[in-house]
Image: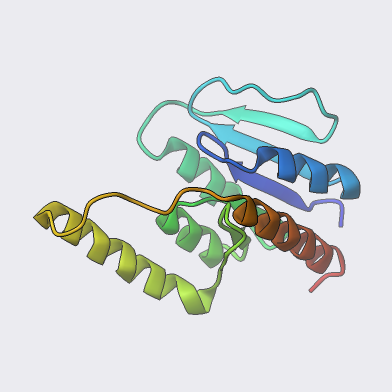
Length: 152
């Protein structure tokens, strides 16, 4: 599938090296989308897309360019929802897939946690990124690329 691409919400993505590894193995185009200049190795399948520093500019670019032949890598739940609606496959950097069945609950939990933090009932954020997350992501991305290459 020649139009297969991995779109990366790249500013804070902890799994870029894993993305390069999988993309290089299968010859898949990777687009790193960021608001600021970003270091990336000179790889033939890698394209940097720098958008304005406007609020949600990177999210808007990714959502506009996502489709059925796209794998979007993001931790942003609202961006994941927009990309799912465009028909994209969406993975969190932990390897957890966002799906039509799970996104509603994720959005509700996000809103609840924001309210609890605003009330001071909860502090902190997500658990620290772990080695197991990296491994789980690598496996999930490999599986997603293969599924899309087979046309399913």
